[in-house]
Image (cartoon, rainbow, N blue to C red):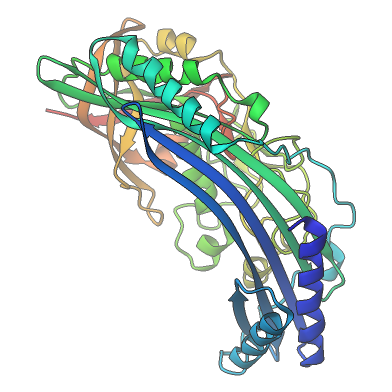
Length: 439
């Protein structure tokens, strides 16, 4: 189903909600089609095709909320779902903060963001690509002796959203990826690593052979890993992990964390939480980017803003409900932030390795040891030990720890080698003086 057909389903649900006398209503319909092929040791391990569609409706009556969803898009099924939502709205507690986002915030200019790039990939072609990607990794070095497989996937999703303010919008967007996971072994030691590429446009994916080769190199680089003694030293996060390190701050300034008073950055707007050089920019309208959106999941028009400027937190990440709970205005972030960019103040990983002198490059994090209320941070880590600005040997079985409020202020540099495969674009990130617990 295309966007216009989904809009018709949304309009049908809204019309039915009006007939049932609700104060407000919103509906969303979706249709996703995808293909994924995984090859392991030269054979097809998994081949999956998805074709899912559905509709969800939320109604508000007397400050009460009721929701229902259905995968059956026949008119009678949609009417039934709306009826269920209306019934549920008589059972829930009143909430003065519930309801649609303010009407004057609705998006009136739905920008074309170049997010739809279908990949007419046949199953046989996906299988062949996955097999070849893995074969490159397995042949790269005799020490690459096993594999968890290579996967090629493509997805196209169409969405429509509308509400009783009169807003209705729709779009289609694609996402494609190629990944490879292999194991290396030497003298009884086994190590595992991976590499992947992801993009909206298949033309922007990295070459499958390069992906297999990179996965093999990364797995080999881990051989000979040692434990190190507990120490305090600089830690350098590679870009794919740096975005997660920054992401903890975004979770802490989300509206839900703020109004529940469960955040280590509680009421921190206006405070300096990063060094002065650091900025976090939200740019929702980047063409082809992984988190671009002309409007949020409530129909509110998105806009460019700086969440952090000169190290100072400028505001929170809010949808309409959390904004009302806090006495603030929606920041068009219902559903999350869109395309966060952390500009670099330094060159890439190699330059930062030289600058750090002695410390740990973190290439993998293990466990979920982050306390969102206190900011206490403790994660298992795997990486490379650096002395005199040069990599000495791989390291495993260590834990890096600290408190995020302090660690954020001790960020020394952010590289210009941004990872653009996700919703937070950040380069390599150097933090001074973390506790590294080892032997």
